[in-house]
Image (cartoon, rainbow, N blue to C red; front, top):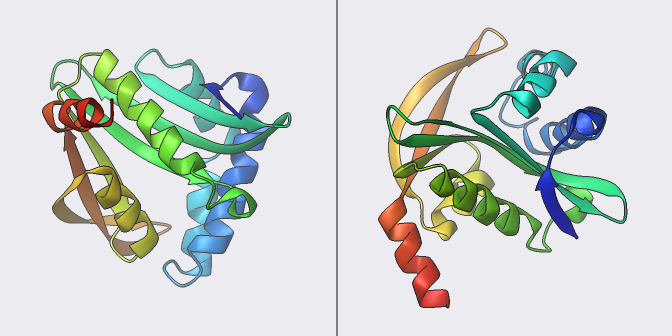
Length: 174
């Protein structure tokens, strides 16, 4: 298993992991229309390509046996010292192997190397698995806001990880 930066050759595989994840995880959370519109909007070829080539974005993929089985998408803004994890997904058939945790760790590490002081991750409030994932990694729950997906309104939680907390956790593991 290898974690690497995505290339434009990975767009279709990223779209496939997103499709599998959303289809498996969100039917009880999102309406069918919101689910499809979210996938069409957030994972269009153009949006994924922009996320791969944009200088202040990070798109990592996990590759195992020449197959993309997960990805993470993050951005950062040096003027605010904040990084944002927009997505971390692992293909349903590859879950439970620690892939998501390794992907999240590498994403946070990369963002802190860019000079950010805090990393924010957004997850739908109804997504218990996602909220637990960030909490177990050391993120603290922050604000809850309304967002729109496909014309429907949902609650989204922000989770925050401070550089100092991350550094202390990494030191304790060393």
